[in-house]
Image (cartoon, rainbow, N blue to C red; front, side, top):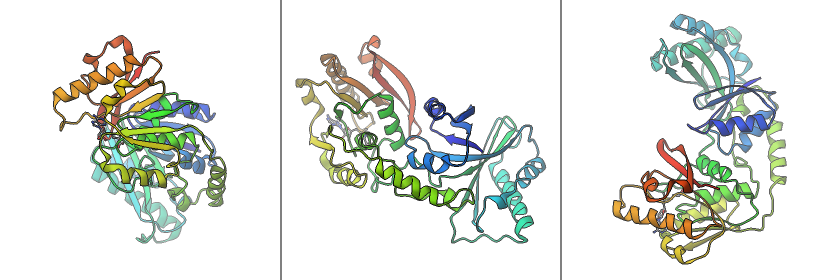
Length: 368
Ligand SMILES: C[S@@+](CC[C@H](N)C(=O)[O-])C[C@H]1O[C@@H](n2cnc3c(N)ncnc32)[C@H](O)[C@@H]1O
């Protein structure tokens, strides 16, 4: 079976590495999509354990040179959709077209919906959507006139964790926080610290990785209403995942000068089963300048406009000073404050471009 994992921009390389590590057969990477083949047994496992991907799709079919709506209709209606629909689920078609002759999303979606319905009517004699059922989410991608049909097995995107019940002004995207923790090469054998922790997203994701908690133990997935795999496989995978949770002895420290969000953050950590390993302290970052630090520090310092430029300059200048004073500290920071480049010496770090909720940022890491 062919699959496609969708990722955020600039995170495709990690998805590729993961696919190769699992020995799945990688066959194509396009913008924010990594395609590979394997058997359907992986569907439950990948969805359950996805920390950094957005959705897992089944790549049903693809075709070059689709330049007319008639060709698109024939292409989509030739699929035996009855094979995937257990019941009369409402059909949701989403689409994206890039550098192609067919570009009107509304028309693409309406043509494709008619084509899916035609195939189902052929199978079932009539098709009326049962609005009480969950939607079947189908993505039509047309890039350089090559059309691809993808069927969502995940349902809602996997980057929005269930533990975040209340929102907060500038949280980092959960999947990005998890990606940063993984990219920091932290081996869970020493302490971890976020001195600008806000709603604790980075430390919660770090703790979930350290305790080996599958991020999606508490949710349902679209593949449960696709007629594809035995529904018992998900329960088996969830039971296996519960047995794999570690007791983990180290500590994760979190601090912030603003305790306003503390109750929400604590509650999030509790829901994620990691409140036992996170220790919070209300602390202004400047106080760290007098301390000796030798941990793994991954953080998302403030950068938004409400702070005066002079204050931001001073803060990032102090961040740079802290890193230089503590050569044993392994540090990584993510920020959209691009002037950090001018406040520190470039031989001191490496950086890579990423996006947080669509906003460009850099992930600066200590050069080793
Ligand atoms: C970009 S937010 C971090 C968001 C966090 N990663 C999350 O997912 O919720 C930056 C945080 O830095 C904190 N902060 C601002 N100035 C600070 C200072 N001088 N010392 C410590 N924390 C500070 C803010 O209160 C805010 O929570």
